[in-house]
Length: 265
Image 1: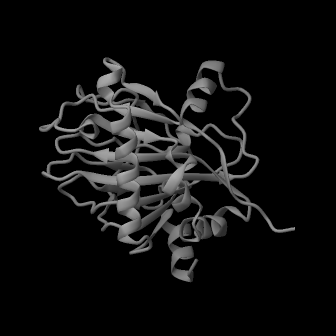
Image 2: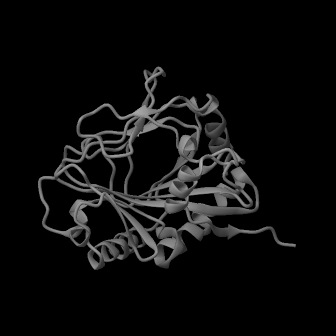
């Protein structure tokens, strides 16, 4: 990490590396995971908002979009893609893992990934902190959010609240919007006046702290916004023992711990 990146991390809870991932590598991820979706489409799992596709777990989109020509038009996220193929190779690359090791230490795992499809007409995700969902004994975690297409104000880019990583985990309540995706939770007890839009081009990567408050807006454009987010934690991280068994099962459904870096002895 550069001095400016380190300062940004400490001050704001995030930093961006522009053009870090090659465009052809971004396209390879999109092609790979759209292939996964088409091989086991939502139409084969009628009524299911969340289903398994081999090694993967897929969340279907509950809000109808303007066009439903392909299977991927009904999908919101693909989980666990970091375990296989080109997506795993990207998650283990020095470009992504190097900065994470600078932040977390020499031994890291990728425990969750999400291939995100923000199709035209789809609503955004409300303000939240990732560590609310990551009930782990070792905090924080680090996300590497890779823009696979451009992310603009019109197609639903991320927004962040600089400095909010220094706050504790806030109470999250069910998303109050009638059209909210099942499982979306939101923070309502914070001042979001200092929020910043994170517009990106394909290949840009946003690294951010798991306590950082962030959200996304609705896609009002005619184009899809695609992204790949990798979540990294320190090797040896465990779920806190006081978590109810049902919530442990839920975490295990979308988490898959894959070693990324180990210290050289």
